[in-house]
Structure formats: C-alpha cells, structure tokens
Image (cartoon, rainbow, N blue to C red):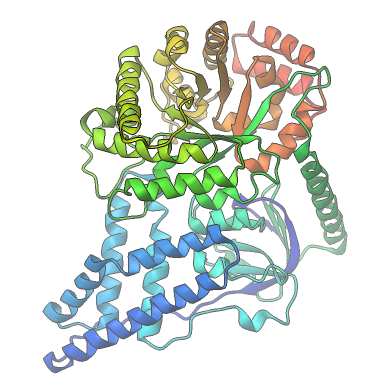
Length: 574
C-alpha cells in the first residue's frame, strides 16, 4: 500500500513502525468544594513548577544552542503572570479543578490564536498545546512520554496523530530515523526541528494511525512524497539503494561548499541564505552560503507578549553576525501586516490586508519601532558585515523618509560616540510593480536590492496565493513577472548597483539557468538548497543561460516558457 501526505523534511527512511498512542487525558470537570480551593491552587503551582523544571531539564540536555531557544519561549509562556493568574482566578471563582482550569485557559488561548489572520502565529498553537498537555499530565501524575524504552530498538519510524517540538527534540537519531503524523503544519516548530535535524518526515497523512500498525515495515520517500506500508523485498532493496545514493550525493554536494558558484565560462554569482530565526543558522556555512541575503526579523517579535527591547534585538543580531565570521548579513527591517500580526499590537481590520497597513507603512505612525530596530542593528554592525534592507517600497517619498530617520539615528550615535559601521549599506526589496517602475530612481538613492518574487508575483498578477480558488494562477514564470524582473535588473545595473532574488524561485533548481541568464548578482534561499543550486551553476555556460533568456523573453505564454526551460535544462540536478 502507498499513501501520501505533505513532506516537511526530505530524505529516505526504511524501518519498523512504532505507533505512538499516548494516554488520552480525561480532565475532571466536576465542581470542587470551597474547602478544596486552596489545595487546587497549591497543586497547580506545584505542578507548574515541575513543568518548568522538566522543560529546563530537556533544554539543559541539548547541545545545540539554537534549539535551546525554543524552550526559552516555552518557559516565557509558562511563567507569564497573566497565564498563571488566569488559571488561579478560574479555580477560585468557578470552583473547578486545577486541571480543568488549565484546560480552559489553554483552549481559550488556542481559540484566540485561531481567530488571528496570521499563519505564523497560528503555528504556535502546537506550542500552547504542548505546554498544556505537560501541565495536565503533571497535575494527574501521568508520566510524560520520553522514548527511553526504545533504546534497544533500531531504525524506528514514529507514527502518531501529532508530535510536539519537545518530543521530536528528544529523539535519539541513532534509533529514530523518521516520523509520520496525521496532523501537523509545515511551519510549526516540530517541522522546523525535523528539517534542522535532517530527519525524514511527512505530515497530514489521513488516518495514518489506523492504516499503520506496530512493527509494520515502512518506507518514507521524502523526495516524491510516498509512504510504503509493508512493501515487497524488491521495493525495500530499491529504496535502500536509493538512500545510499541520496546520502552519497548529499556528501558530494556538501564538498562543493568551499568552491565558488561559478559557471563553466567563469560567470560568478553569490549564493546567500534566507533565515527567519536562530534555529536556521546551524548548517548555513556547511552548506556553502556566502552570507545571509535575508534575515526576516519579524520572527523576533512573534511568540511573545510585548515588543523586544533594543537590547534584546541587539543581542540577537550580534549572535548571528558573529556566527557568520565577517560574511554579509542582510537584515530586513520589521515586515508586519499581510498575514503577519502581533497579538500585543492593535492592527485595523482590513478587507485586503496585503494591500493595507503593512511593512514600512507601519513605521510612519510608529517611529519608535523603527528607531529601536535601527539602533540595535547599528550597534551590532561593528561585529561583522551588515546591510539593512527595507521591505515593500512603492515610492521615492518612502525612501526619503527612511533615509532621514536613519540619518537621525546615525547623528545620535555620533553625538553620543557610540561605535557603528560608518559605511553600512542600505537597500530595499523590489516586490511591487511600483518599485519595478521606479527602480532606476531607487538605484540612485540606495546601495543594493533584492527581488521578493513571492510578493512581486502576487501583486503583478493580482492573485492571492493563499486563495485556493485562484492559486493556480500564481506563477512566477509568467511572461509579465519575468519582464518585471528583467526590467529591475537592467535598471539597477545601469546605476552600477547590485541586485539579487530572495523569493522561493531562487531555490528552484529547474530555473537556475534562467535566473543567471537574467543577470542577477546573488541568489538567496534556504541553505539546504545551496549545494544543489551551486552544483547546477558549475555545470552550464553563462552564454547558454543568456541565450535561454533571450529566447524566453520572446514568449507570450507560461506553457511555452516551461517547455523550453525543460528542454534546455534537462541535464541539471532537480
């Protein structure tokens, strides 16, 4: 039998299934006696203390500093005064048990998050559920699942309805080689950790806990999104061979990390990494990234109850800058709105938020947010090579406003004799047709540019990529989008400035040749894709890439573009 889901971490895994059926929590919903209130409050506080202790113990056992940060977030949520006080108030005012109070508050928070039109914040639901489950387990004296009894087993594939980040992070990777879940999300902490551990994983597999039994032999094909249940010997042999080749190729590609991304006829392009949080920096240099082309700073502002201070931001930027050892770190200023909102910040209700109050438009009425971030970046700039990039530019007026605010901070630093990189570069993302059409003027005022193809495609084609009814129309290889990209590159180059791409298309190996032929100076992507993209670049001629672009820009349909691309690039690694 073959079943499918959604791949969140690629690779192959062949092993025996372990069906994780955790004990169902039956919460006591009966009213308690008024004389038992003090006991329930005390019982809650004791269990709360034990839960914090458990998370700190898991954290202390981790060698990876970046993964320890996840549990900082858990502990912040647990120790939030409003969270604790709300639970105690429910016990006292509603005469209910501590476990029922915890269950109600967790569900209340989850419902509140579900109402927010924000994909990233919704991914934090799993974190709240993880915290709530541990708290209730401790209140009921149920042992938390710790995988210790699997120590004698090998090549295990975990099958579960869902997995929490705190469970995956404790996996013994010598024993557990992959997992499959019925639920989950691509952007959850669980998925992020699986990817960083390079643990093959497939989520959203309908009824997987009913289709797979303990000790069934399972193959995860995390390349083509197939799950084989009790396959025959020939299929097992085939996939074990595929896995060996896959691992060999991975090692071979990683060896390219020290080599330049240079075509056969010597055209050189820089390959940078996109990151959204500290967890993603671990493998950046090993994968051959020459710098960070996009650091999405909004994730510093998420999953908390108030704005990060200038000091907190400074330490986060400093850590990443120092980690990169003098390589470029491009820090994008806060890009909120659209589908990214903060629970502690009042956003207006908008019918079309992607066209509304977002990104730099927020700064005009909230200069303190911009100033704190610019101060933190400038202070951190002395520890390496930093660039500042502004999102969602549509006019020169915005550029003049931002440059003026930046000059104010620089003047303040000079006056106070605070050190910063005097030559720090500032740039902008080109992600609207407006920015494309004034790109030659932008290039007179700014130092560098990065094309955000995700938004540029959305705004050029007037297609909401999150709307299932029209998402099939969302196509970056549209003739109109490609002409927008080419126009921007040519305009910026006429002013002798550099321009790259940091959208998802940069990691698509089937279009690498096209992107180089357009004349880009850099590509920025998730670092896991860099070895494959670099390998492709080192196996074709730039002259051929330019000829390909010359031919493609004559076409007026997506089908013609895709047909020629496939024909001309079939020798590349996909």
